[in-house]
Image 1: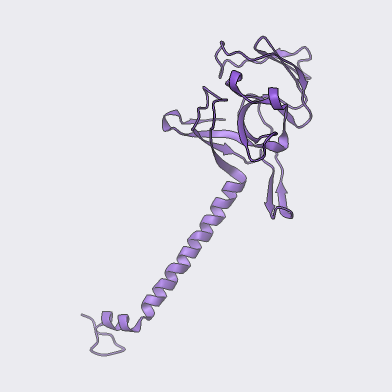
Image 2: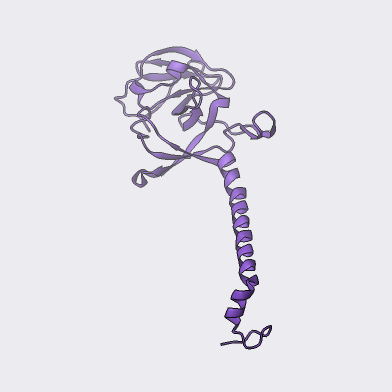
Length: 218
């Protein structure tokens, strides 16, 4: 047993318990460390959540068989989503999209018809192109292909998939034509028309769940 030099003869542990100063200091230090951890987590997590990645659960069957109902996806927002930072009416600054979407990649976007609803579809037509569907073939006309070319979808669709015919649709400078992989059970650009660039949230980066179907998308 070690004696407390401030009070001779009184054991150090007993003296500290009566004094109480060491316990109060430890509690204060613990609280300060918790605040530091919280602030550090906020500094790391908030920018990641606002600017970089966002989780989504697939709901419905419009993207079957490539994306099933209930699957957990991580969406890359960086460079694809228009982000306002600050108050709703007076943002401090705005980050505009600077990446272009790639044909045939799956994306997440806000529904043109219903506020608060997010959809996952596949990019088919790019800005300025004309898209038409004939006998389940998607024909795209652009500057390089004035006579049109048939889109090869064999990497994600079976040859037996039927896509209903559609008259030519010309996209604007910031518009995309999107389709669900489950062509006979998908609400997409055949119904609500082109998707404006400002509605795009991001592209699918990773399927995290179920683990057995985990996959990265470039």
